[in-house]
Image (cartoon, rainbow, N blue to C red; front, side, top):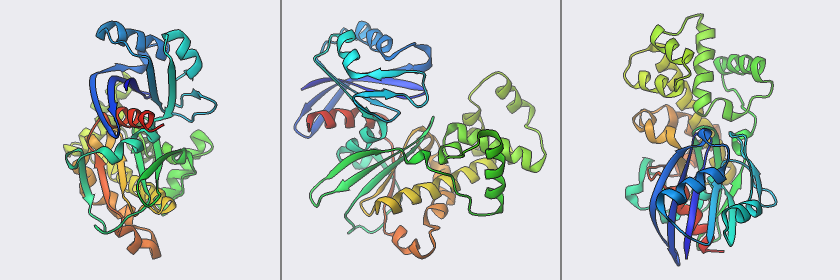
Length: 326
């Protein structure tokens, strides 16, 4: 089967052509486009088809948002995607919409060892459910149910569950964010925008100003989260370093929450651009400290393997695999 596959996120949209044969997927002609530069998914797909000259009858798009009745109001884009409308506008026989983290979860079983970086080995004899947690533009989560023979992926919106503080600093963080947003979800602290929220809180908490070079990035609408992370990695700014350390501890805590809820003895997989770009910081310990910090469940947490997904095309591979297995 030949498929047009897509990964539609708040920051970028990736498209490619997939060939499926049983459980295997071959991917080619991948292109990436800045999502916010287009008014709709139709415009991006039309651009892709024009640039590549590709033709196909079937498409499956992984979308950052909940899917209902073949429709999705994207979480971090002002788009409404409708599978039937896409079939008509693009002249396709069949279009399927899939939650983006569910697509990642469908792709996990076909990843090779080279596509993964191990943070914690866990118990090599463990089998069972698994989960995916991905911090990027938002905070996506999905589960993989183990039926005794293979995993079955399913979507969740766990990243939008309520943030729970664990110490005095985090209680102060919650109070600060409630004054800005009202309800505070985990996505408000564990995501790209979450890094900026944490930095703003620590700046307020310590009554300090951002360095001039960082304030210039903020004022000009640059990628503040990436700048903070890079400054922390370069040890250029103590406030940036504190921000990223707090972020990693919170990321570990929420990944651990998801792992407990899924009883993820089959593994916890970290997706998204933040893990991929900050692997050295993930390895330094704060993430795993937060992950293991589950009181009486600490020994259970240590049985769960924790791995970072290095393959950037996992959502495309998973979308194709999902379609092939229907």
